[in-house]
Image 1 (cartoon, rainbow, N blue to C red):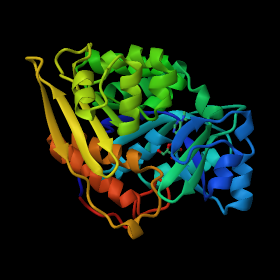
Image 2 (image 1 turned 120 degrees about the vertical axis):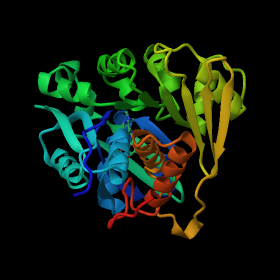
Image 3 (image 1 turned 135 degrees about the vertical axis):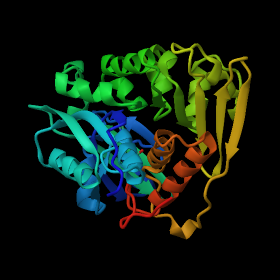
Image 4 (image 1 turned 90 degrees about the vertical axis):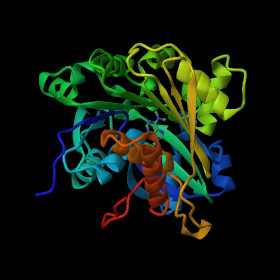
Length: 347
Ligand code: 26A
């Protein structure tokens, strides 16, 4: 019998259903969206979802950045390796998310909100860009009480790795901190993704509260630049930024911080702080793919994080874990939205 996991990896964030359609300049302009961005929906965006469904042949796909990452990690890891936590509504969209995760082997422990509907993300695809516009709804109502329920907290204590999407810094900082404290006090890795430039820009205070707990920080080049600009890092050099972030103060001094910055088709940069305050830099190239093989880039970064996490959970060295992330990202961008090919491919 194949080996089974023991729910080593626990992920927390915002469960969303993606409503993804192909758009154009006009649609972006109509809602004031940038071609490649991730934002929280304002009242002026609320018509986008129906617009996508009615006029842009939009598809419903499981989304929510860290939920995509959990599904990605589980794609590689043995059965029963991954738990995902977040808040959904008691509705059809919520049921869809639950079913997709179950089918892909991710154990979900959702909080169900009695009133709010399941959150949705409008995804406008133009070429290789994707614009994400999120109406969090129930996803915004995650509560620490849920995490502290004895049967859920048992799963938290049992886990050996924690992954939080930075997007959750807009939702429930006490739940993030509870996981971070559990990780630091028992010397288990706590991994955070910056998720979007608006997180360091507009949620700097909660980010700075959580940062000392972060053992591994994952971000793309735009998020790294936004972090530097908001944290007095006077450099635009991605390696310099990574080195500086790796050395920022840390709660658990037993684990030096690792910073992983992806840069689209350019090599991924990793900075690992050493005990002597030096920082080691590793560069890992992406897996090349021809332009006509790309379906869309929605979820590429989440897939990277999923493959990378699977490597970390399996105890692989940093270079191999990053390469696993690049491998899974390459598979995902050939699918519709944040999805992975079935039948499964193996790394
Ligand atoms: C709080 N916000 C804005 C969000 C998101 C989000 N996931 C959690 N919180 N905005 C977009 N996403 C998800 O990101 C994935 C692509 O990386 C989308 O649902 C999409 O699947």
